[in-house]
Length: 107
Picture 1: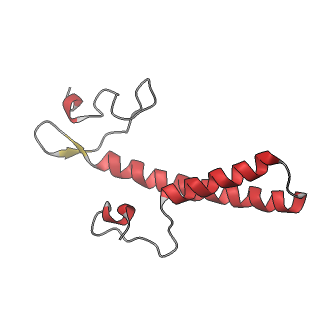
Picture 2 (picture 1 turned 180 degrees about the vertical axis):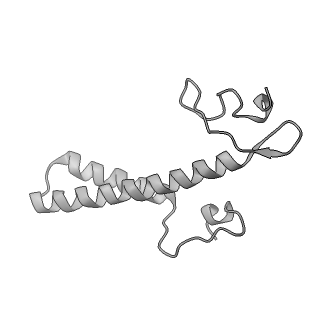
Picture 3 (picture 1 turned 180 degrees about the horizontal axis):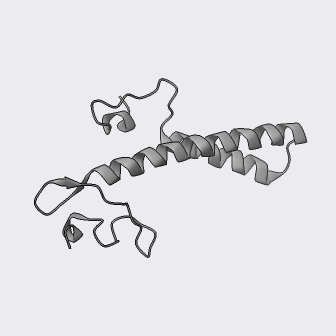
């Protein structure tokens, strides 16, 4: 069983064709690398570009679902759960915004 499927809530199903985010990212990086080399024929480059845009779309869908899960699972000080937006701190990492961590909840 993959890490991605293990981290899901029991009632969330993994689509048979769903690829882990890390695999999508690696595939996208490979596509970008091939396109940056510039040594492929135009038709091949177009096909790679189309594949890359599809990978971006699928990856964004995975990130959107992950963000929804984070929004649902932020804990309050009392131990209950509340929905709050996921905020990035100044370094572009999660958890730094006010109210986005258990310590900041309820302030």
